[in-house]
Length: 136
View 1: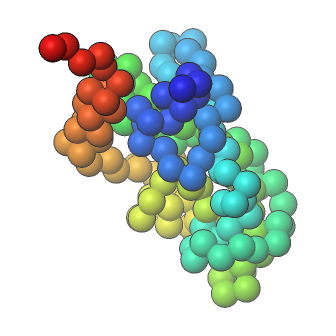
View 2: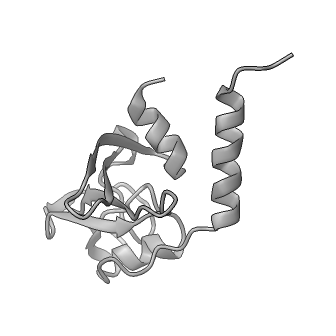
């Protein structure tokens, strides 16, 4: 399994591709992501495919579930599209679901993506156990 897929699994990313992972100046982990080709150019409000409007404000960062004591951020382009229902809105960011996606669509910057830490921890443990060698 390529390293980028391991990062995607650790962070619980779906419908997104990890482009690169870097350690920032202050020791934080920054994971650059992009939507899969099927998920590009979708409205952040209703997820319908929509024509592009502009590049928005460029790359943006959102806080992800920390890796132990290390702060973790997801970074992605945030272009805008012209939705038939909602007008000009930010593209859907596929690695976020629910209210966090609506916050991105409403232009509120990096406003508090929430993660169920218990569920995320259980997913990481399950992924590690699936990949661990069996002892008999």
